[in-house]
Length: 200
Image (cartoon, rainbow, N blue to C red; front, top):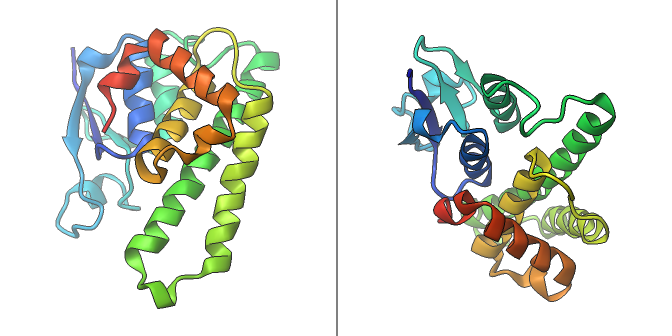
């Protein structure tokens, strides 16, 4: 079978999401992981994705798909559909909305890390950082009240990856106030071996 090349980095929650989805839909054997350096102008990533962002999926004919939401939909399509993205519209759009919320948590978390890494302390915008932290807090509160249920789908995976990133970069501080989510994540990890296999 033709390989699919995934350009990503080990700590990316979005790249991790794609890898876990590939496992859930039975396409891990077709996925070749090639590290990408988004800060290197010489990395071919910028030719594969004009935005120079990860993850980017490269097909055998050179076609590239990005971002992670598009890649996940493509992998679900390759697997026959209705595997991790429900086909029933009544369920599908609720699932995709939950996945978007989880992605938003990961995105706001990443932005906080970038602000701290790329700016000197005196130049950091504390109000902007607080705004991103508030997004994370509100998203976690929503999921604490209603974590994803049922079969493992894209919303489950996106949330698990967002929480995993919070564990990695924020030392799991979220766990103290979100016990239901911590329990949910333990269950996800037990059900989905790819979660541990893709940990940084």
